Length: 576
DNA sequence: AAACCGGGCGCG
DNA sequence: AAAGCGCGCCCGGTTT
View 1 (tube, chains in turn blue, purple, red):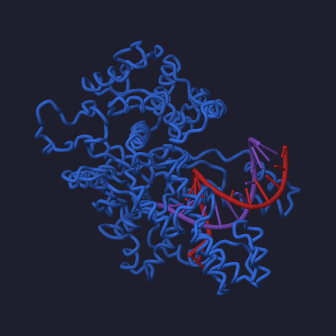
View 2 (cartoon, protein in one colour):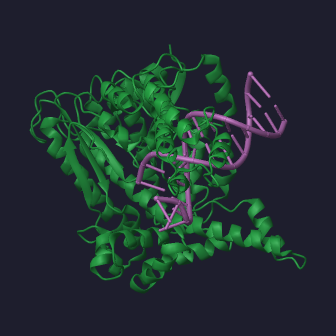
View 3 (tube, rainbow, N blue to C red):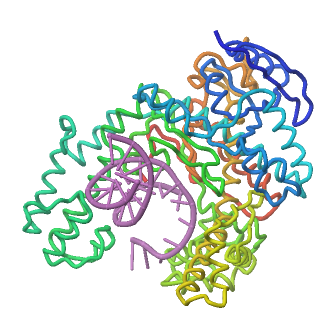
């Protein structure tokens, strides 16, 4: 009963090999067949608009070009000589199609109402072809099209991964989650009542403050109560409270911790986001200016480490968790070609490397110095330690210092593959020009200087965070292909294909796409979790390592930087 | 009643 | 511990 749609599949990046008109419900079969034949690069207006239905029908694709994601990169990239045509097609500068709502969705009209305010890309074939042509022209005008092609392919592959992870879901042990909540908060209360352990802790706080009516949930009222009890803090944040040794502080900190857990990941969250043993967060690829992913709903990027034990593999399966140690400084070492910094991290913890080479005294100092260098710290311990890095790692420090200088002056910076920072706002530019007028007050100059410093720290961090995000995307993109080529449950080794099933072609996946084969279930900036049949867990772990090595080579060639992983295979994700 | 703001805190 | 970057979400409180 679908309406007519048009599909274009492309051979490689250029040649159109076919244009077809078909019903929406004919699409999965069509794509499955084409995918098996020639594995084209499919062009999607916006991946979440097309791919979830394919996945639901058991069809995966190998590669695509997501016009919305690629538009966002091309319209800003400094590498593109002529961006005007792309930039003017501003209907493509839009929000992603909202992914399927949470299980307990709002009333349908509300969703429709909300969507009508969100700007979305067009999905018809003529618009897509026109945009594809504009993007191709822009890409050809680029000074280094190879890098940009790499970035666009990785970004689009990220779109596929996000849709696949949402379809697969994170295997989630509701009973374990409930057990953790009960241990911290007490048993689940009726309705919106506060759990018993929280009430008890709150009573301890009120008793210690000698204020039986103290309201612990309002910052302002709580601050007042604290002052009345002689606790002189300027805010109610936990690091400031920890300075005081008043007997009310310990239970108050406990209460805040409980309150956070209940509000962010309590029973209500469990009801809303976990069903049939799967947590299905909504990822937003390219949602952060630097190229990192964002999340929308469900807090996918904020799952507290406290709840990690609730991630549990299905019976007979394993979770393989892997994260890159010190990804950002390694990305910086690679992109700046800083051999000394690369050497400090080679085959070991990069922070310990700094200690071993006598640059700082302790691992903690190393961490403060390196983070301070990337974030632009100027005060405290960090401000004291960063200059030592300038002596030891001149190339790396030169790169971030110059990015900061460019940003502070209102200029743009780009990542290794060519993602360019956004132009400073009109307000920012007005502030700068006002401070250069003859009648500028000291207050004007102060404000302008502070804003310039802020922008400098932003661009300083942009090149590092953004390049690290590119490495992570390349890792993900390569990993999903490697995992898809692993054998399924009860199948032998790769190559030993059983009759009737060809491994290595995604389109052959049948039935529930992820029920038989190793697949990604979680991604968080520098960390992945793969869900794999126990018999293939080692092979999946090898795929994760191999993909990391490939990503390093793909981006940085033979630069002497490695990206070592901390990797564990287990039934449960480890507590952090 | 809905939209917005800032504090606070979870993640990298 | 934060500091210095990037996020999302919840809450109470204020504005519209």
